[in-house]
Image 1 (cartoon, rainbow, N blue to C red):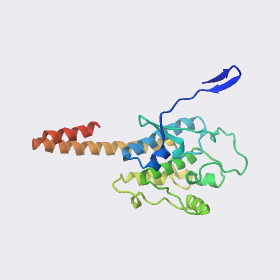
Image 2: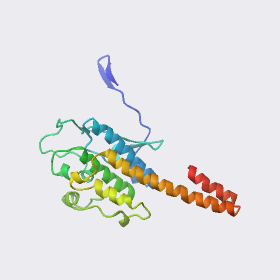
Image 3: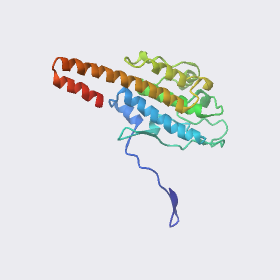
Image 4: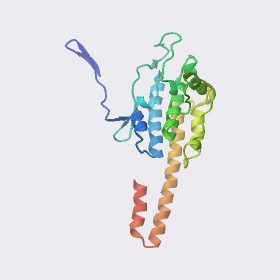
Length: 231
């Protein structure tokens, strides 16, 4: 809502109770893989809504993602967003946050929804591994990595993750935007599929454990296994 009160303009926005994803990452707060992927799915859904209305955010990064107290993630700070075909920057002015920029942002090429998808891929990679996919001590070297280098495989930093995540990240971080996901909704779909597959495997694992415990009359352990399914 917006309006004017006795000559003073005002803007009413939703109050978000939570913390930025950046603060979660820097604090080292424990967050499991499912929760990490769910955050990115929420980001994708928010971007899909914006992109359908011809709004390109252009600065997706952990500092612009709020994780609410209920675990829901929301995108904030559309201050440098591009709306429709209107340019809101000067010619040859590069806008965005260095490590999360898409190759086309760095090269000052026309932007579309693909730039937000690339940035989301960077955030996903950082959230999973605790490190950035394209980083160097020198700014110029970082820019060259973004433009030319593939991201290191996830197993260089973490273990015990769904192998499909590597494919998702590589597609989201494709240098050629035509090779990326066609939409944020498509990226969300693949991530949701991975989460559901992992959840089904976890349920099957705990059920098997509960059945074994009941056969051994270990009722407390069986109850614990079943509670894991409900949690």
